[in-house]
Image (cartoon, rainbow, N blue to C red):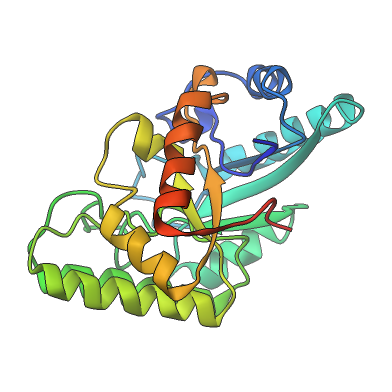
Length: 251
C-alpha cells in the first residue's frame, strides 16, 4: 500500500501519538503519500464542547505542525494536509470560512452524526429507525453537492439493524449518487481492525455491482495502526470478492 489520506492526531481527543511518529511509521511501512485528516473543528455554539474533534483554536497548530513536517521530510515521503469533516448545514458556511484561512489541501467526508451534531446520536450506534437511515443517506448526498471531497470515508458507517430491504434500497441509492458524481468510496481499515459494523459486505457487494470506485483508508488513531499488512490483506479479499474498482491512488 503506497498511500493513505486518512489519519488522525491527538488533537481529536480520541487518538494518540505525535505527527512525527505517524510519519516515521509511514516511512517504515513504505508509504509514498501520507495525508493527515484529523477531525475538523466546527464553529459550534460556545456552550457545546465536542468530545471527538479538535477545537477551532487548535487548527493553526495542526496546520503549522503538518506543514513543518512536510518540508522536513520532503525527500522521504509526500505529506498532505487535510481534514475529515461532516456536513452540518447550520455550520457549513462558517466552517468553510474558517478553514479558508489555511492551506488545507483536501477534505474527506465522514458523516459521524446526523443533523448538526448537537443533540444527535452517533451514526455508528445500532438503530432500527427508518428515519435515521434515510437522514444519513440524504445528508451525505446533500454534502456531495456542496463540496468536492477527496472521497467518502466509511460510507457504510450507519449501523442500521432494521428492515434489510430498506437498508439495501437506501445504500444502493447512496452508491448510485456517488458513482454519478465520480465520488470514491473508502474501505475503512479501522472498521476491519476493530470489527465494527463496517465495512459491510452487503454494502460492498452493491458497490461492486454499481461499478463504484474504491480506495483504502487506514483511519489510524494510534501509531501502531499506520502499517497494517494483515488488515490490507482482508481489504484486498473484499476487493476480489466483490469485483471492486480499487484505485491506485486518489488523485
